[in-house]
Image (cartoon, rainbow, N blue to C red; front, side, top):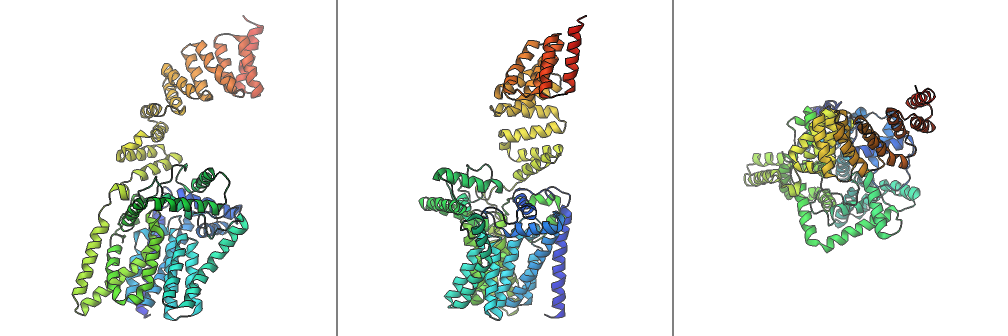
Length: 637
């Protein structure tokens, strides 16, 4: 490279790292920065276990291991510091951009390479995932490293270069298991070209990098699992009678769609149906079989769902998963900046570039194969924005090629081809940016993001902020207000932020919606009690006890409500049932002693107080009541 070209490369890489660093610093102190959620939380827990208690684990891998092991080693050496983890990821992501540049430079020249690097340096989704506690950025780096290894092998063929090419794909497989299909596709292309030795070396390199994980699974779990046992559950999640959306929708037998529930939930359901315990590989095979049976039994539905998945993969909308990137822009000025996105301009330019590359298709054939193989590896499952992320570096090569080729063709005086390419660009620009209906792409508003942020604030002692987020979610989706769990959470946020009248309203709604829960009427009764409305409090607390006769706090407060209403017989009766079912609940006996004292029944007061002291020796209120009762019994006047 010329000095000016090298300076341009260094300057652009520096700008790429600095904007990623700005992204990290802009989010510092905001929600989720120091509190991982969903997959991030799962990786964090796993990394802590690797660093502190169990490096090798005790079972076959369910999730891809490379990222959590890298995170665990970082924790072991440097401590659990989310700021420096993100900064290191930004540096690794920037290094990946350098590999992408070098790959394109060797294949297509400096001008195409620097344009590719410019797109990638300021691509919004790359920026976000390069600084998130998720494995996705490593998937992109794996693709970028794979492209560089391929470029080196093509430029000056040598056996070890093909081995490295396959090895990089193998490492990528430990980040995203579906990348294994790229090794098979690359080897198949080489075999078709009768390049048998490179084909074998590619497969050999991939297997060499995967083998340690396979051996580890065999030793630790005594089970043959190549990398992970997640293929079957994932395939079934995308192809089952309950899901024809093309998006992620967990089967109803799962407690929740979170990593900590998926593995155990799929195992439990498989073992329930099969009627015997199963190894991880057997669970994987079971769900693969169920998914394949469903696909062939409902092939028309499968084709329709797959078409929806293709539409989502090619649409500008980034289907949210753990995080909603447009929503997260409220916390970072970097995400609000005018950056490159899939719809503007990567996908339209890539479409034009694919057309323009066809005249030189022998040079681009490997890119076609890798692009197609990755699409096939995800189109039969379900779609999130982060799942298509590894496609983007390859698309950016075609996008940059389109820019350079259009300029060249115009310089050569050729107008017909640039016009066709421009038409493809415009048509793709329109198509990918057409909003998909909610039935396909899901809602584009922030209803779920507001709800999740409300949960975050609620669990971080910020009830006023939680209430505001829940209210925003309900405005966007009134269906939330039909869910007693949501109504309950909103009521609790109101109560904890001092908005008792609104809390009372929501709790009463929760009582009406959920006829089985005792906690809602208990909360309503408690609020009435603190407002001095003892008759209403008693009504709701009695309802709570009817729903759950063992609810000790409700029994104590019900008895106290009756006591303040001077309904002593009802107060004693409220304590009878719970006292029998909870013989160690000394608070019930203390409340009975207090009521007997009000009635000047000193013998009964002493007896109840002594019962308290047998369970809770030295309890000061019980001691005081016992001594007062003894005194009154000795000196009644």
